[in-house]
Image (cartoon, rainbow, N blue to C red):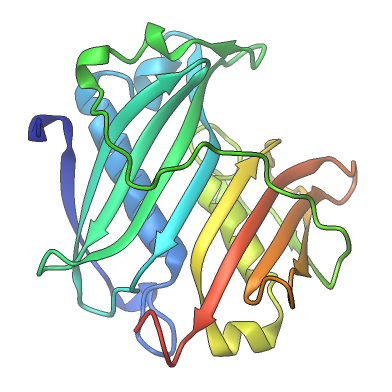
Length: 255
C-alpha cells in the first residue's frame, strides 16, 4: 500500500473536549479530521489558502461518519486522512481515528466540491487535485445516495450562527451543522445514547447572525435508534442540510 499518500497527525483529548463521562464529543473528533485535512491539502498544494489565490475554495458536500468508540480524556488519537478519488465535480477524502494501540475509533468518508469565490460555480477537481495523490481506498464504502427528508417534526430547536462558528470562508464550518443536529435531539436520547453514525448532505451556507431551525424526526419503530434531521434558515425557509443519525446505548456500546 502506498503509505506516502496517507497523512497522519496525532491529537490529544483535552479537558474542554469531553462530556460528563469524560468522553470526547463527536464534533471534537471531526475537528481533528478537519485540521488534518487542512495540513495534508497544504502539503499537496491544494489547501483552501492555495485555492483562494486562484479565486477558488473547497466546500463540503457529503459526510458519513461511523463512531465505533469514543476517545476519553487524555487519550492520544492518531488521525489518518487521504484523497480517495474524483467523481464528476466531486473529490473524495477519507478519515480514520485510532487510539494509541491502533484500534479504530472513528471512520469517515467525505465528498467535496471546488467552487469559484465570486459566482459559487463548481470547477472540476482535476484542475487542483493530481491523480498521483489519490489512493483508491475508502474508509467507509458509500455511494452517497440521497438522504430522506423528515416527514414530520418531533422536536425543533433554534440556533443562531455565532462569530466563533465561522471559518476562513466566512461561513459556518461544516462541523457546526452536525453540532446543531446532535444538540437538537430529544433530551432523553442524549442522556441515554451516543451517536454511532452520522450522514449529512450540505445544501446551503450559513452566515453570521443567521437563525437556524434544527428539526428532528424519530424514524422508529421501524428503524429503532434512527433519526432524520433537517436544518432550515428560519427567515428564508431555505433548507441548509439534511441528516440521518443512528444512536446506541451508552451502557452497552461506544464505551
